[in-house]
Length: 445
Ligand SMILES: C[S@@+](CC[C@H](N)C(=O)[O-])C[C@H]1O[C@@H](n2cnc3c(N)ncnc32)[C@H](O)[C@@H]1O
Ligand code: SF4
Image 1 (tube, rainbow, N blue to C red):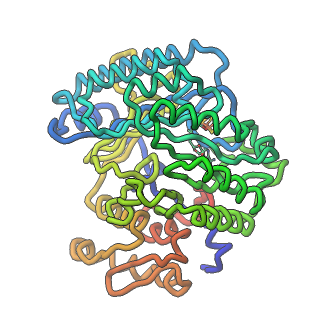
Image 2 (image 1 turned 135 degrees about the vertical axis):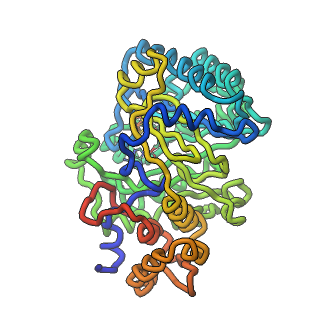
């Protein structure tokens, strides 16, 4: 294996928001399994809930999310109705009204819901679950289309964390990605959120987009830092046109190649560190006092489908089309096609389409991979005691150790600061399902 930074950056490995990853999901898990898993939950232990809203008003050409573009309001209203029914269905299968510690609305664009729809959804969630005091209630926001009535509805419903899709503030880049969003619009949006007490703000940036240069990206970071979000996510653009054919619309504008992506990533990272943010995991940044930064220092950071989190719940219940749930027994994903999801719920059935049941081996490897992705260090001695074949994975680390991307002392594996960007590649050593010849994933950096 060639070990220079560029070829490493080109290697195609999962983002490990779960292990096994979604690539391993199959028909082995269905609605009956999920019904049984829900029924076996301990009503004393808080769960997390993820609600997916798969609609947007305009397509960003880089988008890799499960969403569809709607100009009318009727499909959103119809979806909202079905979502309420899905909540009732989950409630009827759970052993009791479960306590809830984390609630996340993602998309698509959750703020496409009207204030009335959002309030009704929150009210139903509050009936079905017992929202714990201090629970984190987070919403992904598209600054375009956010208005005062929506912000007021979020605040009135108890939302206490928001993440804003920024991506890039350069007008040339915005034109190339079909996302027009001037800095002034973002600044107004942030001011409005703060007026309503929504102080915990994250912002998403992407590097690797057409027309980005280190200078434009540094300017975007400077402008973002001046708005003082608590957290910033810096995602590498995932170009997967074999899954998202609209991404080909970016190709005529010229996508940066692997060496250019590395330069962009380094420039944005340096600018964020210079602005006083701490690096968290592989792609998050946070102010030193932020709970994510504190969790990173304490070694209590976790990783789930939304990325890095302080959420420690062992169960995540996903509602909405394509939403993924995590149970102690395995992962389950709802049908991604809106019609399939809706038809199942309207029949009074869960909309589970696929998933994977966890083996003891999966659990061990999942804990190793999560520790590497979150803490950059793990001692696998207890795992080797349970399964001596894991010692072979340690041997397979040798080329990465030789390249300085990982260090090994006995059974402890550590990723040094220079290797952190490549943590996914070190983690992949412990992925027993990854087939090097099948490039289904986006580039590592
Ligand atoms: C659901 S969107 C956030 C909310 C809202 N839809 C918006 O865009 O403002 C989630 C985030 O995923 C990231 N994202 C989407 N497609 C991506 C891709 N192909 N590669 C990397 N990041 C991507 C963007 O940073 C985006 O903000
Ligand atoms: S990035 Fe966000 S707003 Fe743009 S299409 Fe994707 S989900 Fe919709």
